[in-house]
Amino acid sequence: MGTKLVPVAALLAAVVLATGPALAEPPAAEGPLGGDRLAGRGLIVPKGVKAPPKTKATSFVIADAETGQVLAAKNPHGRYLPASTLKTLTALALIPKLDRNLKVKPSRTAVNQEGSAVGLSTKPIYKVDDLFKALMLTSGNDAAMALAEANGGLSTTLADMNSEAKRLQANDTVAKTPSGLDKPGQSSSAYDLALIARAGLANPEFRRYVSLKTSRFPAPKGYYEIGNHNKLLWRYKGMVGVKNGWTSKALGSFVGAATRDGHTIIVTIMRHDGYFWEEVEHLLDWGFAMRGKSTPVGTLVDPLPAQPVTKQVQAPAVPAAPAAAPAQGAGSEPGTSRAIGALAIGAGVLGGAGWLFYGMRRRRTARESSRTAGRR
Image 1 (cartoon, rainbow, N blue to C red):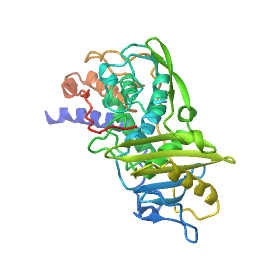
Image 2: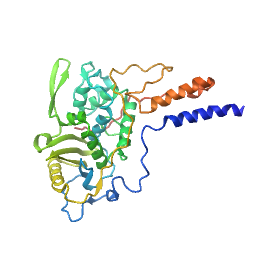
Image 3: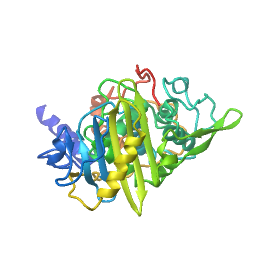
């Protein structure tokens, strides 16, 4: 009887090996990601160079977007609550998966999200394109949840966000909400936010959203205008965008990028207790002045290779019956559908092996816990 079980085990092992991981695993790091100097918790500046202007931020990174060189930093890998700057990861993870013309009907859960909101209704009047504008301009937590629903649900979206963070090698980042509302276990770092911003700037749709100053937004009766919360879009020469955030626990955070003379500088700050706009301007000025004139203190690492995704072009359907095999595409993690399909085929060939897969169904959570006092 034992010999009859050998083919079953062999087939299951072959199926697992055949599916493989969706992402290539990076080699084991011998030191901190981006270079040994980035392990420091204090100010990290090239030798013989005037230090960047002072800032109240607990952590920051100044980097060259083209070369990936980190020009200066302070506690770059310190893990903190990211607040709404996490929406940059939400956008980067979902833009490739959702068709911008897809119509979305937000749920009451989405409409009633705590904190900053664009003011969604439960009517099917919004395109994905509208929701991304609301996400990145007005920092709508309601838009973040509506996009998560369009992507197949909260659990799927968080899996996609964390998978994207892993692809970018943003290893300090753990997403627990699509909006950035504080939740235990959620974190990011100034280094990771710079990685995310750099990848986002390479995506034309992401860049378009973060660069918009204003936009018309659908309402049950007509439209109204929404404006970008990033003040530097109006006052800093060459400002591209990206995203600011605040909660009472995270304090102020910001991810910004500006372009001058064909070169782009990225500045990220975390845990700033106060008004940071002028400080960010001075950090950007320092970055432009030092670019190409000093030895970098580290580097923004390149993303890992990933499998292509398929955009979702129709509204999410009611979950399929247990017998239906999930289709590869939007709302599923890369490699998941292939693995389930291969296991199902193996079960069909072996007949009696089908019971091994009974009950293997992902549980999705529909409730999001957020206890912040407010955010913008």
